Structures are given as C-alpha cells and as structure tokens.
Image (cartoon, rainbow, N blue to C red):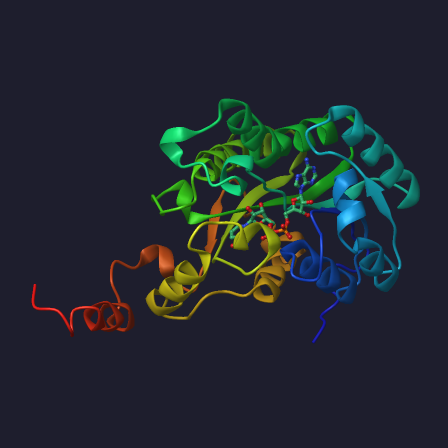
Length: 277
Ligand SMILES: NC(=O)c1ccc[n+]([C@@H]2O[C@H](COP(=O)([O-])OP(=O)(O)OC[C@H]3O[C@@H](n4cnc5c(N)ncnc54)[C@H](O)[C@@H]3O)[C@@H](O)[C@H]2O)c1
C-alpha cells in the first residue's frame, strides 16, 4: 500500500544492478510513493545488469557514474537537477565492492591495491557524493541521504574481510558529514545496517548461505528482506523522520542486540549429537 510519502520529492538512487539489488526495491517503492528520481550506476554495471528495465518501469532514466570519480558525480548531479527541474531531496548510496572478497583473499593476505579500491568504492565514494552535492548546492533543506551498511562494522563476522573496514569508515562519514550538512543546510545523513540479503554483492561473501541461516535463527524477527529495507529507506527519505541524522540504524530483525538464541543454540547442539567430545 502506498501513502504518497515522497510526493513532490526528487532524488538520485545509486546501485540498482538487477532485481535482487536493494536499490532496485528502493526505486520501485520510491516510485510507488510518488517520488521522481534518476537512477545511477557504474558504466560497467550498465552493461552487465538490466537497470534500463527498471528505468522504464519508473518512468525515468539512467545516468552512468563511477561513484569514485568526482567528475562523473558532478555531471550526474548537474544533469539530474536539469532533468528533475531543480534541487533534489533524497539520495540512496547503495554501493559496495571488494576485489579481495571476490578473489577469496583472506584478511591476513590482502592485496593492498584491492584494499584501496574497496575503501574508495565502498566508503570514500560516499564522501565524494556528499561533497559534490554540497559544492553544487544540489540538495534542498530537510533533504535526506542514506547509505547502506552492515554490522561487520561493529563486530567481526567471518568472511566479511576488508568490507568490514570500509563499512566502519562509511558509518563514520555519515556522522562527520551529517554534522556539517545538518548544521549548515538541515540535511540528514544516516546509514542503515541491513541483514544479510541474497544479492550479487551479498552472495559474494564467503559462507554467505550459512550466515543467512545463522542470522535468521538469531534474529527474533528473522532477517530483514531487501523489500523491507526499501520500506525503511522510504521512511528516512520522507518528512516523518526529519530530526533523525548522524545515526547508524540497525534494520536486522534484532540480530545486533542478540548474544545467543534458542533456535541457534538448538541447531548448534545438533552437531554434538553423534560425537562424544
Ligand atoms: N546484500 C547484503 O547482504 C548486504 C547487507 C548489508 C549491507 N549491504 C550493502 O547494500 C549495498 C547494496 O548492495 P546489494 O546487496 O544490493 O548488492 P548489489 O550487488 O546489487 O549492489 C551493489 C552495487 O554497487 C555498484 N557499484 C560497484 N562499484 C561501483 C562504482 N565504482 N560506482 C558506482 N556503483 C558501483 C554495483 O554496480 C551494484 O549496483 C552495498 O553497500 C552493500 O554493502 C548489503
């Protein structure tokens, strides 16, 4: 059911690659809620994915931008303001990638060139988006910027690798820029810490299926889906959350507050049933 929460609002949504992407669901819901927006992704992703289908369904267009490239971002913001007839109100940063994760290099055998790329793509790009928007004065007062993150920023989770460091930095950027943007322009900056979700980026993490099962058993409300994450994003873009800023908001069915659950320990105990030690 739609509530017109984004009626009259305009935005930019980064990171929709295919129908599993969290950004894809956010775009669908933003459209349902009356928002108008531009879709953006890296040039290579436009060739790999099917973002144009999404653009057609949402009556919009795609502007390519490598989010690590400030020139691309400037071009994106300028063209978005032209196409949307003015400044924007919301931005979703739904971008993450690690070549170290992709290549299966463990945390104590990282390739440092890859490590820098991880940071540039997955966290510094968020600073670049914010700084470019601010330099161009591209966001209206009471606008809202959201980036997606993961609990590995606070707790060590096997297999998340250098992405954990990138997410810690991403969350810190939300606080540091959130202060400046809030003070000067009344613009909110937050991160949403989402449950493991079966997407292209998520499934690349080592042991992802077991992680998904484990967090499902640990979370009193179960894992949050991509579609539920999209609902939460919409609420943060809406005027119902105007005084929420500089926060890392867990959207994980309660996982981040759990130590052990009955469902998880029961499953764990099964592994001892056939052995004596
Ligand atoms: N899937 C999960 O389990 C999970 C959990 C918590 C947080 N997140 C975060 O959610 C966000 C979206 O990921 P997703 O799970 O929807 O996967 P996804 O693979 O669908 O999305 C990742 C996107 O990042 C884009 N991207 C990569 N490099 C880029 C660049 N240089 N410039 C612009 N875009 C670039 C990709 O093209 C892709 O669209 C990421 O920040 C991810 O870390 C995912």
